[in-house]
Length: 342
Ligand code: PBG
Image 1 (tube, protein in one colour):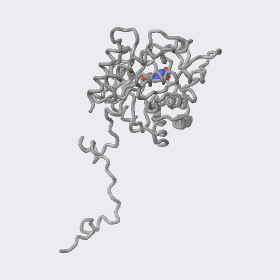
Image 2 (spheres, helix red, strand yellow; image 1 turned 90 degrees about the vertical axis):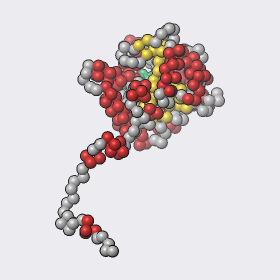
Image 3 (cartoon, helix red, strand yellow; image 1 turned 180 degrees about the horizontal axis):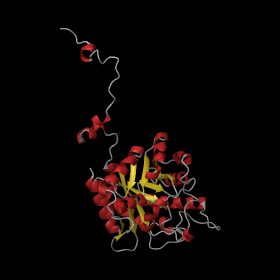
Image 4 (spheres, protein in one colour; image 1 turned 60 degrees about the vertical axis):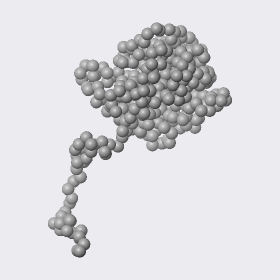
């Protein structure tokens, strides 16, 4: 049999001519084809649900600027976490709202602080079925609303604050946290917390460091959720990052990894996709990104006005965060996504 020559399939008339342009639309023809060639897939197991637990309330309280998110009682928190687990969500991060605040934020390290009580009960009930993360900071617990203790001139005292974070880390680990997540942007916090945990036998408690956390205008609804007003109309620009700086974020990430961070985080997410992407290219630990309260609230508000489509924009944004390089996304959409989008 005669072998088929190349020239039989490729008519002489085409040889030497320019070929037709590539047509990317061929691969967009059907949902099945689009699914086949998708580069990124967002899944429930990528997500961490941030949850608020408040001391001294008897029923869950809605947070008006965070539609669909409540301040929980211990009881309602437990049912929420149970339901999230049944929906396939693998991790939650807890924030506490204490009944009383003071200058040093005692509730953050009190063995009977609200988050410690919650961790104990959740760990007892769910064990390893749910990754229990605890935000490690004092701003929810301080009367002045700063993420640390103040010195005599009213500035946040770095080293005194780090000592308190170590106590909080131990209280959280002791109560059953699997991951502690220092979010206060104090220098040296990760190394000190790692040493404190190891010294007390908590070698297996991981640290997810809020490494590149910007002094963003997008935390407003969160501050409603935890009843925080920064004293004197202040801000966190003295310790959180300046949004004009990208290289600085990489220095922060390097320092945290050197000090023992197991996961590094970029926060917020949508305005910092360049940072997420640069961090992903630089490190080999998991990268998390926090799609923060203001990002969530903007979608809710615009959708409530009929200006954008809620479901489309929510999935578009979370997918963009993953595409930029985040392995883990903290998002108030976690439950909704688990219920409706997979
Ligand atoms: C600090 C902390 C904040 C958020 C998470 N951890 C607030 C802040 O830095 O002012 C914000 C999260 C959000 O806006 O969703 N404990």
